[in-house]
Length: 529
Image 1 (cartoon, rainbow, N blue to C red):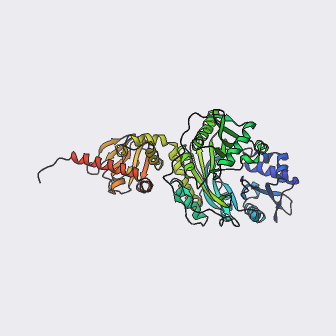
Image 2 (tube, one colour; image 1 turned 135 degrees about the vertical axis):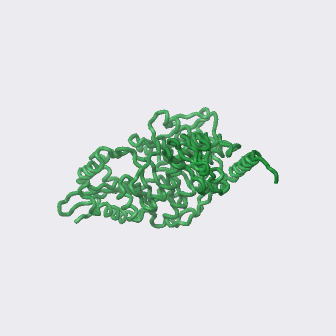
Image 3 (cartoon, one colour; image 1 turned 135 degrees about the horizontal axis):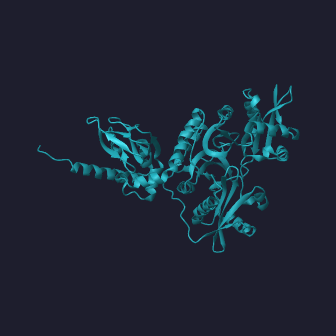
């Protein structure tokens, strides 16, 4: 018989052995291999560790923990993690038993529970979903195990969490599909409002960066109390915790200075094992300081070559911050309803991630809801990796002539990369798939059925299918890759969604189409009636 109980100091050797048997030496949380650190975790007020014991042999077969109060604002927020079962004891239901017991013990102390489920092994996701957690995000390449692994983020709400939720978040269009899907998974109405008009924060000039020092603490507190009423970035710590707390948590701040005057700061923590940087607070005296701090931190960390990704939780009611982060290369990877408790209500959060490594992703079969999240999140990361090439190609096409830098970036952001092997069909004559392909690399031969031989060759910077995209007519010719070819694909549905929010882009594109059609008609010889 298997019983689950809270761990004691006598269990730490067994817990360590379980992690070693499960992960070898590749587990990034070194404290689970250190007996002294494990004892401290067992008796910590902020962490509950459970073990599953065989009552006949008294062998500990599995372990799991709940990290309580992972937010900075008494959020009643916890992470359900560190679940490991001895390889010899798998397929006995121990993982699900550990999860259910954790929920029973802490559900009355929480409003929101989170799970980061490894996608390398599908049982982690299955256990979480069968216990009431629902997918709300996908975290690509977040953790360094034997290699970098991706995780599915799941959430579950308890008590009055949803009744305290602030309604009608304002999100940028790039966040909207993920937000609607996450809200649906959490059985909430899709009440997000799309905000295309809010501009990003401006660049600031004449400022300097400096590492945080004790003498700046009082100044920052005054700025924070006077200016930060509606926070836009959230994390596990805040400046008001005090210097000692910040230092013990190995957290850091960079200051923004205008001459000798402190005008803002950005707080962050860094995991050297995962090479992950987490921004948890931003304090700014005015709008210009915000972008300066974000770009300054990224530049500093990249110069030191110690970061593979940056993660920021931004308010779903702060479209200017969302837009700024998007322009700086961050992409929405999760949407967590009611995650943060602020003043008298719970706020939705958008988790935005910037990768500095190639977006390579693979996973066993995902559940339907997890796959739906992946289908929304991942394409943007693949496209972002080649976004400069897409932007460059778009600016060279007559169809997009006249778009300014912001318009080009918005258009490029909705394109999806597609690769074709030599001989593979890109478009087929007579088909109506309403997709535009912009060649980034490679080449394609254009063939008409009437002639059965190539009538032209399309290379990098050129496009295929623009008439079908915009007019709804079938393709007038076929095109096949003559070698390995990479394209940026834009579908009619994606274009229609973009134009709905940005009619200025649609106006320029349709004007260019009319000019192009007029030029083609002008080249048609006119005979007698």
